[in-house]
Length: 77
Image (cartoon, rainbow, N blue to C red; front, top):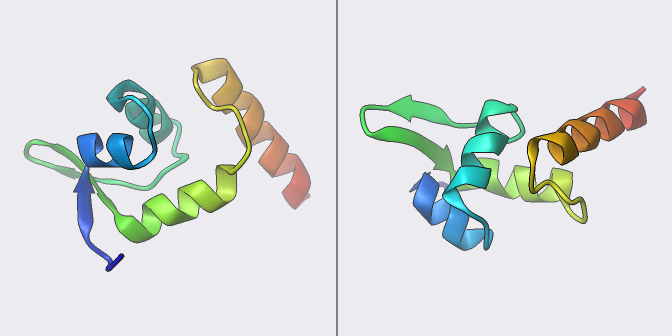
């Protein structure tokens, strides 16, 4: 996929997730985004980085996101 911009809904569809989860991941800085007049946009490259970084982790709610972030930080140390 070329480096194109995707909407929250497109990212959710692509990842078989909800728009609410995509918003959670964005607020937790787990996935990069840019703010635009109608919401947020995500480069396909950023979505791929997110998938690679959090592959195999359960990140369906805020608590699980916090645990995944802590685990990644611990691995980097």
